[in-house]
Image (tube, rainbow, N blue to C red; front, side, top):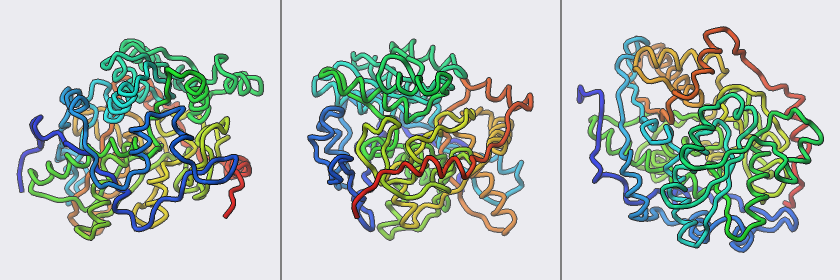
Length: 454
């Protein structure tokens, strides 16, 4: 066993292709449907929002898709990202488990989000688009897309969930520093936002609402497209650089992975670390346990049905089959803003449905306790979202101790918490609380699921 704690690759080892898990699925994804006709959509339905290159990636079944040289050149600013063995955490837990983490917080935006932001901005620019609109929860995605647009000479407008807009002023400043324009959502700029505010002037917002606003603006302008930070197949595809690098770094560590853990909100960072490993499992090359950790306050995978639903609150998007809490679901304002989406990526939902991914949930206090323990042992303060992955990894390490087994655990530390310190301040002050979303409210949101012909 290599005794080094840090496993690095040089820039020549930046992946040259993304891995497409659709090539290895046991059964194909359910089609995306037109909400008006109930029929599968075609490229022309997505063309008002996305460039054709991304639409093709959305439906591709090729195993590997080449990464453009210009995208790889920007990746060089932070890729390959480091992989660490968490020896101090192992010691604190007194576990026989070997814990590794891939650290995506080294990117300029401080998270994994630029992996797809740069790619999406590139493909849009190639097709003559000059401006992108998007939504953001905690601000990680908005920061990443603003950065990518700046690098490629494009404009960026970000609709930020209002509760996060108020909780995280430094994320707003980061978006603006990179050149993006940020607006609290729901806003008065769109008909979707105005309709929400007419019903609830104090609405705290949701990712579903912010998506509606960004889509509305993009659909109405020929020079503007929409970019999504999670959920869609092409977004998850771009994130697989993380898992591809991790596999090579685990070889440097003279080890291999038994358990992969990642937090899940829309599914992008989870897919990034897990899909290359799941693909290997699907091809019969090596078994692996894969755990998706979500917040108990937004229990999409653990309590939401696997059903067709809209991706946004205003019901402007096509229908996707996914685990969902209902597009009208507005979660409480807990601090993991990037995990507050009502649905889950269709690919992640599909893999849960086929039994290849095990979902679990973590309450807010357990997540922050795990984050603090990680910071005090490993020296990195995780983002609130990443705390859920840390908590999941700790659970597995404790299970190894109880069972007397030595397994290798890998998790994705998808971002740092340097701009989220108010959340930690509130945690230490005892202001945070666990929140179990009421079954009655979930049932109310699910009552509005669209009827889809069988």
